[in-house]
Length: 123
Image (tube, rainbow, N blue to C red):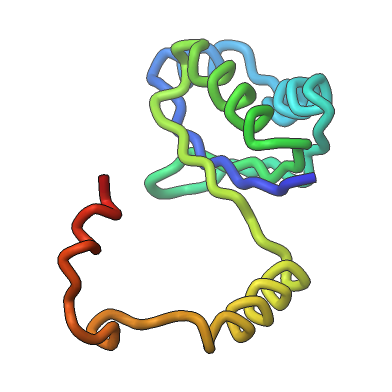
C-alpha cells in the first residue's frame, strides 16, 4: 500500500457547521479511507496555514486521487495538498538504486559536443 499525507483547509461554512454541531471529523475520514480499501494512521487539526492533516495508506494513486476528489467536491474544503510518503526502507532502496546509476548518468555540461540529431529526440 502507498502512504500519503493530506493537508486540508476548511471553508468558513464548514467551520460554522462544526461549531454549531461539534463532531469528531476523524471518524468521517476513517470511514471514507476504509471504504476505498485503505487504512488511516492519524488525523490532526493544527494551527497555521492548514487546518489539519490526515496520514493514510491506500492501494494506489488512483484511490488517493478519488479520496481527495470526493472530499474536495463537498465544497466544504477550501484547499487540499496531498503528498506521497516514503518509508526509510524505501528511501534506502532508492538511494542504493541511485548509486547503481552513477556510472550511466551524464550530468549537464558533461555530455560532450552537441549533435544536430539530438534535436529530433524531443519530438
